[in-house]
Length: 205
Image (tube, rainbow, N blue to C red; front, top):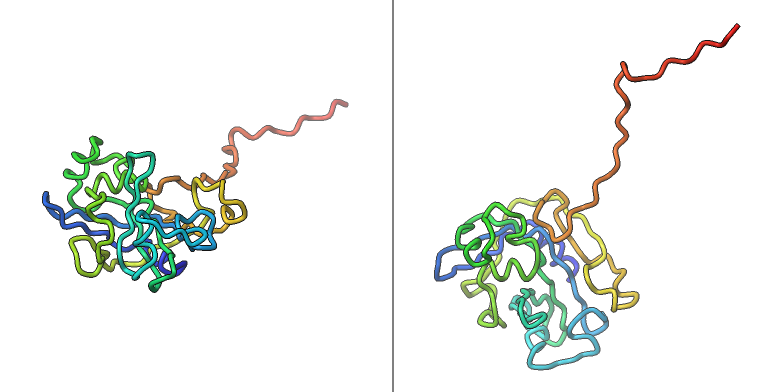
């Protein structure tokens, strides 16, 4: 599960939509390990109509709706009966950006186009129709791409999950402007120009 989440970063997420081919490079992903993980929808072994896809088999899409508005796309990662999944949190748009912009109502050059799990689903046109899709044999799939640097941090928006909220299970490309949260800038000390340096005062005699 953690290996899958890490290796998703840099891969291409491809959707063969009716409007054309839509492609984005994954720049952020989070791992969820049910049923132990209090942040997972499958926590405690909850198997409902909503979470059924999480229980396997691996390589299928788990879609869920938040706030009744925003679809989120996950990849089921383990064998049947082990409800582990990876949430794709952000992509960097590469192909079909005009269609994505139209789907989102946002300019194609804005980072807000796909810098969040709900935003990328809206941009790519992903919703309940893609629930349970086989990601190896459907119009929605991942494709190989050159490796990128990967950083990690705690997951976002799960403070309710107790100690599980501290797990460093968020993986992201630290050089991408499309992550849902940009890395904090590191303070850099810039020495004053030579001409501005104060000269030592002379002692009075």
